[in-house]
Every structure is written in structure tokens, then in C-alpha cells.
Length: 339
Image 1 (cartoon, one colour):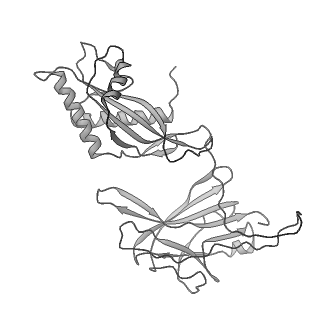
Image 2: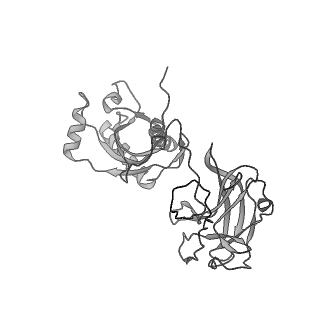
Image 3: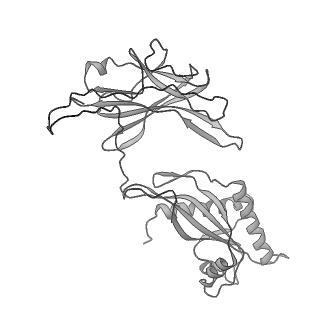
């Protein structure tokens, strides 16, 4: 019975599949194998070219490893790609080795960032970074490969690969308001402090840049805010009508989307995406009234938890890649009983 697939094996296999499918699409099918170069050495009777991917080194991502045991760990993986060509017609195996290596160089130069794939629930988009190998490193590597003679090889860093836990962490709720209180004695009396909501700070938006991010705020009778809360079943929740003002390049299209949270499932997409357009070039001060906004509906009004609203826009870069830019978040907290 084979071992179960892991996020690491799935990620490495996806790179080999990308290499093999690229050669197949060009009309030159090959074998893309995972393993050591010694294990990939073809027999004298083999008639098919091989490319072997040897994943041999695994390191933390280098920006600090502060993940808890049940959080996804992102690592850098190092790979040696070795050509094992065979003689065909009047072309020697040595020349075919160079053709294979040259094609790999071209392939990852033209597509250094591979298409995103789902790896154990995490979205991985591997970046292939060419690494130089010194003569000492080449000698040390191939001395470990039994009696296999050195073959033309390339070294790549794969950044980044997720190590997904079996029981992923459930993200916690966000802070909607902050209050402080000073007492002379340590008592368990209820706090009398009214938490202060974060003030809406008008931000300059440079819409001349391609990837400018929209800014949003809830419109209330007392002005603008970025956080709202209400008790389940309360008259305040029943009367709640959410209205959002969107700042950016006036008339630019955006999409309003929700993320929701509960103690069991944590954060996840929720609600229905809503198209809208930027109405103002800059958010007014938080005390401003009479601001026109877009009406939005809460994903749920019957379950305790939180919902975060974003305004997102899609940008197409000069290289053709599409990038999603999101606004600041707006938070709605629904609680049971007293906050």
C-alpha cells in the first residue's frame, strides 16, 4: 500500500508534471521523474529521454519562522534537474542532453512563476529561481550518486512550498474597538468604559499608479466608521442598513466581497460578491455626514461571529499577469447578549 500524499510531495510532483506537460505539448514527450540521479540512470535498452528532478534540500523561508504547530509552514525547496538523454538517429545522447537542459532554461525563464495550484487547502504559486553550482558543490553532489557519471544539470530554488498540518489553525476574531480603564483595586466589576471605534483616516490615493488600492468606510448617521457591532436579535441589528462609500478613481469598477468568521470554521469567504464603482476620490473625515454610499447586505444576521468587507479591483500588469488589489477592511461583529 503506497504512502499517503503530502503537501510537499504534491508540490514537487506538480513541478515535474509542468515540465512533462510542456514537452508533451511541444510534441516531444519525455519522462519527468522524481528521485535521485542514480535511480534515474536509464538502461542501455531505454529509448526515451528522461529529466530527473532531485529535491535534495529544504530550508525555512528566511523571513522568520514564527508559525504555531497547527499553522501552515512555508519553506524553500532546492532541486537538481538532470538530463538523461539517449542516442537517436544521428544525434548523440550528449547533444540531446544539452537540448533538454536548454529547453528547461528557456521554460523557467519564460515562466518563472508557475500557475497556482491547491496543495492541501493552501494556494501555492511556485517561483523557480536558477541557482549557480560551484565545482565543489557539483563534486560533493555527484560523489553521493554511486557510480553514476556526472550529467548536465541545473539547480533551482522553489519558493515557497507549504507544509500543511492535518488540523489547520482556526483564525481568531478581529478587534473591533478598544477601551481602557484604571482602577484602584483589582475587582471583577463590569467595565463602564465605552470602547472607542477606530477613526477613519482620510488617505491620499495615487490613482496614477496602476495598482492603486481603493479605500472604503461605512456610512452611518453620525459619520463614517470602519467597525460596527450589534447584538443578535437587538433592535439595532434589525434596523441596521449598511452603506459603504468607496474612494478611488471616480467611476472605476470594484467588487465588494465578504469574509466571515465563526469559532468553529474560522475565516472563509462568505456572502455574495457585489459590483460597484468608486464614487469619491478621497474619504471624508470620520465626522462627515450626508455622504452617499452603496447599500450592501450582511452575509448573515442570525449567527454570532464577524464579517469583513473588502473592495477589490483586478489589475493586469505589463507581463499579462492579473493581480487583485484589496482595500482596507471594514468589520462587523455580531454577538450574543452583552458585548
